[in-house]
Length: 170
Image (cartoon, rainbow, N blue to C red; front, top):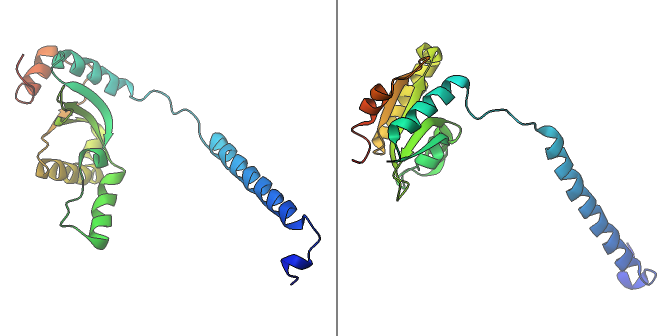
């Protein structure tokens, strides 16, 4: 292998410029792959979820913020006493799960209540197991959970009554 001093003048500079161009080209192509890999998913909520969201926002009546489809990992954190592979296992158990709706305090945005909208899929064994895990994790962290069966219509008074103990007074 020749020493740098044995190469024709300018060769290291040309090699550096070509290397930089190659890196820029690879960086540009990487972005195009992401652009081609995804499409818009459509509405954030199904029709049933949107119906409940509308009822929920009316029932809350400005006393809390309503957020939808919040990751459990944004609501919970693994305790400091859990370490190593147990930490990763605990984190992975919440990383890809979400809560249907979260009511938060207006001023601090602390979660007041998680609401799960239960459709017929929640009768399946795997969903019951998932729901039991989520309920246990949330309540263990001090966040109450309310399960609401999906309906074609929601009476405002019924939703207000279900939320009465979780919202600040008017």
